[in-house]
Length: 124
Image 1: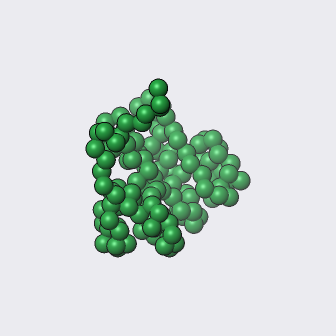
Image 2: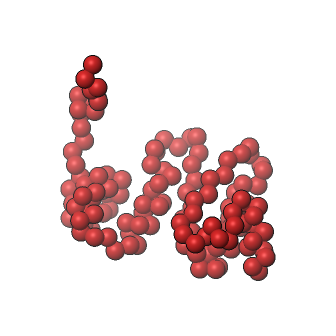
Image 3: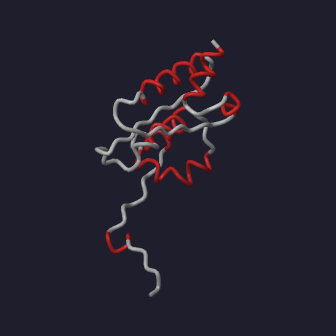
């Protein structure tokens, strides 16, 4: 089984030593090359060996600029014990992405800025 994992990792451009900490993999290419298949195989192999795997998918059709990061943030926000300082500091912005956290944290979202506050002035 170890050889199968090493072969799959090698195909994905990784080494087993790369898995000692957080790893991100981005695969791009033309349709039909087998990108999804290798990622599903790699995900399966890593999970059966106790690795935590978070999968995100981004397509050109997606309109949500945070689509790639939401699964990662969700795993952290809902499964990790966060310090109260982090919740106080970032909670008002995070509840805009994850409204269900509003009641859990008892945090109100920051107000949405109108157009006149959205522009950055460079002083020229």
